Length: 214
Image (cartoon, rainbow, N blue to C red; front, side, top):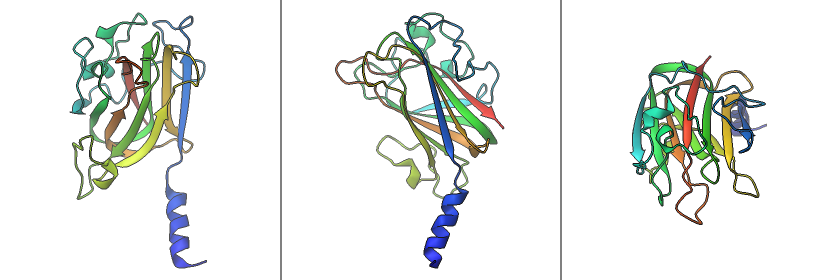
């Protein structure tokens, strides 16, 4: 085996195996408890509870809540409650925001939750993470910048859309690892996309984001 191939295999073996678990409650079974069959409900005091959220790209819908709604531990009580969810402006293609945990911590999992009776229920996003130590680190990569070129690591791509139907209901996503640790990071970057472009109502109603420390 040549040296280059051996190094490539070693690097691959050291990479954290990411495990993405998704769950869904349909409109008939969704309720304010956010209870899922395969996922924990949102936590009230997780590692993200005191994080700082910053909009990097896109426009926040004025009918919705601010970014802080994602970490306040307060959940919507109804299926279509704009003031209790964060979402990007109608007719736009989504956007990016950064979560600063305040210091580097070892992360066990990152959980995202959403709720809406139709196409604003599913979640479609890319997730990056960084400890901020790279000499080329850019804390605010705009939508035209590939974060992997400036100190960020792509963790995973999430897409919970179904093949048919309007996808309404309650969604939970857990990004974790078979090893129990995603790695040690301070910053998380969420790049959110619309669930459909047939009309202006494709931006997801995000209800909460939890970061669980190892």
